[in-house]
Structures are given as C-alpha cells and as structure tokens.
Length: 390
Image 1: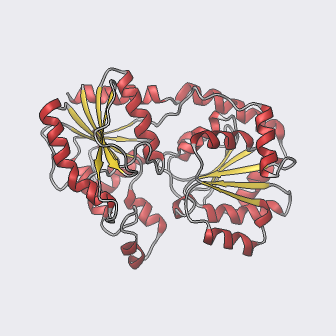
Image 2: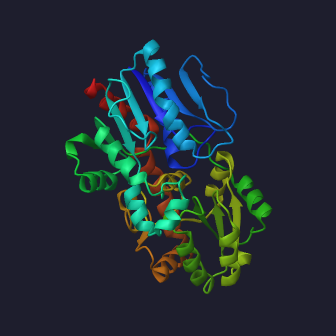
C-alpha cells in the first residue's frame, strides 16, 4: 500500500517517544513492503523532498525566524499532501499524534488513521496549570487550544491506534468514541542493540566519578511536570539518609530551576545532570545504572521502561497510566503510588539492598521484553489495520 505518514517529530528532530515511534514504525512498514512517504517539518535546515530507494521523506520547509512551528506545518501540510497524492495516489494517511489541526475532515479522500500516544486533555488536567501559564505555552501540549484540536483529531479519524489499553480507555471515555474504532497496539523497541561490556561500564563510571557507588537513573524531559522529576528528587533525598548513592538525570530541558532545587535540598553532590544525550550515550547510561526509576504522573505507554528492560535492569515506577500494563509489581519491578515519597524511597532502598532480586528482575525483564515487544510486531499489527481499512 502507498502510505502518507504525517509526523511532527522525525529524525533528526526527535523530542520524545512520538519521534522514536515514527522512526521505527516507518522503517518496519517499509520492510513489510509498503511504500511510505513521510511528511515532517524541516527543523534544522534539512533538504526538502529528500528521498532514497526505500523511503520518501518530504521535509516541509518552515520559516526559521517565525514562531509557532506546528501552526506553520499545519498550514503547509494539505498542499504538500495533495501535490504528492496527485502523483502517488495514497491509499491511506497515518497521523502520528496531533500532527495536524483537522479543520477539514479529510485532506484527501482516503482513510485517515491516527496514533494517540496519550490524551493531552488528561495531561493538562494532571499538570493543573493556570490559564495564564497555558496561554504562554502556546508551543507545547499544555496550550489553551490543543484540547479542541485533539477532539477534532479523534472525531476526524476513520480509525485510531492507541499505544496502550489505558490510552484506549481514555479515548473511549473522554471523547465518547465507539471502542470498535480504536485498537491497542503496543510500542516496540529495537531488540538487536549490542550490550555494553563490563570494561566500558567501568570506564563510564570512572568518567562520572562514581566508580564505587550504586546508580539510579531517570530519563525524560526534565521540565515536563508529567515526568515527576521533583517527586523523584524528594524521594531520593530520603534514600540518601540510608545509603550513599547517585542519581543520574538524563534528558533535555533547562536545568537552572532543578539545580537550584537540588542545591536547596542539600543533595547536589549526589545528582548528576547530563542534559540531552544521543542514542549511543543513552544506551550506555542504561547499562551503567543499577536501578531505573520512572516517577511519572501520567504515561500513555512508557518507552523508557522497555529501554531499561533491554539493559536487564529492575524498575521502580509509579502506578499511573499504562505503567501497570508493562510492570507487574514485584515480578519485573516495584510499583508505588505517585506522590508517595516514602514508598518510592523504600522501594529503591529495598532493591539496593537485595542484589539477588535485582539480578533476577533484570534477567526476567529481558526475557519478557523479547517475548512481547518489538517494532516488527508493532508494525505488522499496524499493517493489518491498513489492510482492513482498504
């Protein structure tokens, strides 16, 4: 089939899980024999209309000096798709999240599929930001108008892919969508990544100056309230009262306010902010940690959980969103209630003191991951959705 795949995030412009999803799903769809044309913004002076033999990528040029990049993309998108459709005659358009504003029900008269990673309406409610703050955040998912766009997106879709049962239930409940119109297809992970060897792990620890300490790892956008980093820092301070460990904070975002919070808490010597790192460095940080911690307030899926499992790590995570679909309490991780700092600290400390449990969970996680999650499996299920719609 000829597929138009619309995504606001695509390499080299990846912000979070939606970009990882786009990159891997598209690659696997091509392997399955689909002809895919990606429509995505040109954010970093890329060439427009770049293509190769297997995949066409239409990088839509935006005005670099003007704000509101998403709005610009939405304005130019219909013309670009119609132009390409006149040549390629797409069988279907697949939107990755809210990657268009859906003022019209159809850009061209072919089925429209939308992948929903999490409802922004739920995220906004969870973040509890005041109206004035949301007005200022016009370029983020917390902006004042995004829920109206999301509603239109859901209503305009011929079919919806939810990345978890939690997200599916939210879509059906919040927007009164018929459940037969929504299918849960879990995200995947690249199962072929090469392990980091022991010598390299020792070298990384030495570079970080923490050769003799246990390491906790957090990965996520550090300024996103939904990721719960402040909650983790409060819990981590309680852990430090019992054991001298290090928290490695990996992710993009302004560190100024968080570093001040860490300083006032008196734990600066035990918290390392790496900022954004590339995929290779991230893989090493997963390998070097002893426990992965996911303190999120809301997760539509949680790709970082799979990344930690691939590195054979135990996980401490919150009982929110889709996390309980991935983590079974005491089997492949410890689940605690969001906001309960003492419970989070106790769970971390218990694992720090129990090397046999850590080793067993790590091994079980790797086996569980290989049996249940992979991008090929994800793309095959998406391909079946395409076939049914056609």
